[in-house]
Amino acid sequence: MAVSRKVSKRAVERNRIKRLVRESFRAQRTQLPSLDVLVIARTSAANTDSPTLRADLDRVWQRLRSLKPTAAPGTIGG
Image (cartoon, rainbow, N blue to C red; front, side):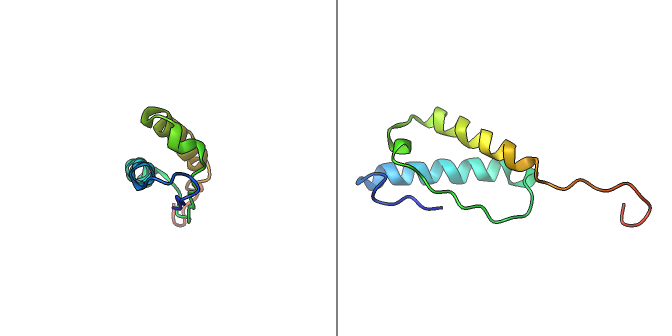
């Protein structure tokens, strides 16, 4: 996760964004595939309210959920 000073000069705003991303990820991580995810905040994130950011993150996790492989039918390992 990267929230640079270009996003906001105020540490309070940058930390709010990081907290929201962490909280959202923790709630969804069991449903996500095993892969590395890099979250880079844009400058508009500092001016966006928390419910909107949370909704955006939920949409992203939903898109990533579709990458999770499903168990193949069969007798071996199934």
